[in-house]
Image 1 (cartoon, rainbow, N blue to C red):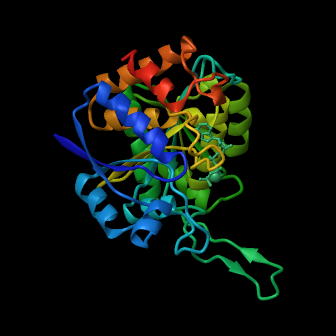
Image 2 (tube, rainbow, N blue to C red):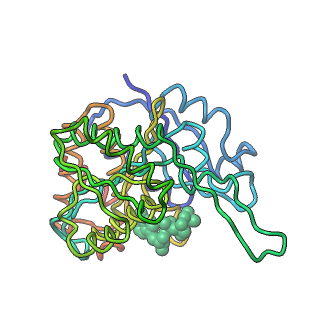
Length: 334
Ligand code: ATP
Ligand code: MG
């Protein structure tokens, strides 16, 4: 039996994780859970945000399902999520955005795309940042490597093949950022040539934002560098109904961590009204990663059917259901 590491997290984390595991159990996915602490909870219990036992558990199981974590200011790292990506070299951030019914979004249909964001380089390296002594000038170094670009673009094309998608859009700003974005684009062209069965086009990031808002149905898979991917994937989440429905996967060679994109939502924590769908959809990505494509599809279909029936939807979706009743409604449709 496959064992996964489960991190229940902070804020609404435990509530949406319990709901998610309940649905997985209703499906008999046959996974064993090893619980590990991270974030505020870990700091309180073990005096560390990211205990060695948690790192060991992820290293051993190679798969983790993770709820949102709070990173207190001034506790070692700027973000535990970023730290996890770094430690496990989780280079691909994969964020699907798909239209769902009854979400009050601008695109209740027609959007079905995946953003593949480079997760380890670009503007996020945190090196070479400098503020002049008088505090009047700031400089940021971005790093793009051929290796980093190659592996993320290859990931995008392989994902297209695996999921039967037809087109990869390489998003860049090589006209202005000639060195960094230029290297990314040139590398992408070389990789794309190895996939004649997948259509490839190039798009400048500013135009991409406009196109996404006006004609999102033209996109299939988007692959881009770290900062552009950060912004674009949030834009895409907004197109299809917001944070409560946006999952993400962080994938590396030796480990993969599946999560909801949203944060710990301290404003609604403990009230039992958090929408569990983002984490459930993250779990669906995890099932796919584990080769359980049929189960992933059944889970997604149950979520869609529940949204269609407006059965026990949480308040963020305009319903008066609770985290638990919504999850039960989903489980009943599996
Ligand atoms: P953090 O500091 O952990 O990032 P945050 O409050 O900055 O937390 P989010 O947790 O992402 O950011 O929340 C932004 C808003 O969206 C909040 O008002 C929150 O209540 C709402 N929200 C986020 N996730 C959910 C969810 N799963 N269900 C319902 N509302 C949510
Ligand atoms: Mg936040």
